[in-house]
Length: 353
Image 1 (cartoon, helix red, strand yellow):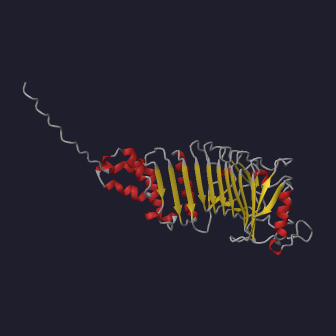
Image 2: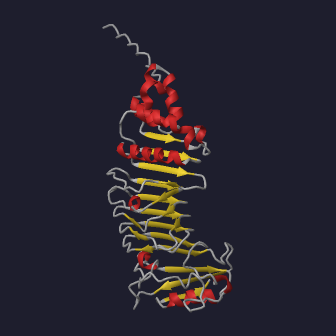
């Protein structure tokens, strides 16, 4: 029997894949990371790219090359045409960053925010980077899809700060904003950061976020916000800076006027009628709590003490999860002794390290 002839194997198939071979969906996702102007310019690459920019999953309305010194005026006409020609597809993210604005341009920015909400945006960022604050419409945001809100350099009023109509909102960040409302409320919020913001000096801001997991309150100007109970809180960082209107103006002298008739303006300020702790009452459930006072405190502390909490006969105001309290300072003076005395009332005992 004649031997079988060996079959010749087929030549290997060479597959050449370029960006042009990708489906529309990933291409539109990639275009979302470009400034909107650059995304639109891709329409000249080929016939297939002509309309891809109209259905991107995100919009970045910023300067080309991510410039941050672009005024609203320079982008207004472009954005008007962009939103008019774009398909009404859902948006994952919208980012708007401007250096400055004029009074006549404020309605346009508010209109662009409403457009993003209509397109079911999940992550919304709006930054105004100059010294003047841009006022947002005193209207509530209404969105079942908004999950993250990042605001900078804005005036936020009463109705806007009520997020009852945003049941999916979990992350709220406010930097260098002016807060004219008296209350921030959200049942869904999990992460809240307020940094460098100014409050109405005559009022105490009320924060009602019962589902909060993490809180950052840093370098605010005004009275310390009243924090309602946050039973699910895991981490809290509160920095009482020089702008805090609850700090005794005689702090640095070491002589506290407290509430006597010769006290400073802050200590003699009108009581708001709250009997419980303005700050600690809301964050007492935190597993990790960091309280910082910038007044008279430097980064190179010389004294460090560690205290431990004994749950035996401990007051209910202290979290059952609290294990360790650390106090770091330059020296143990009258101010530090008052802090230690307060903590000892909660059955916390300290030792030097």
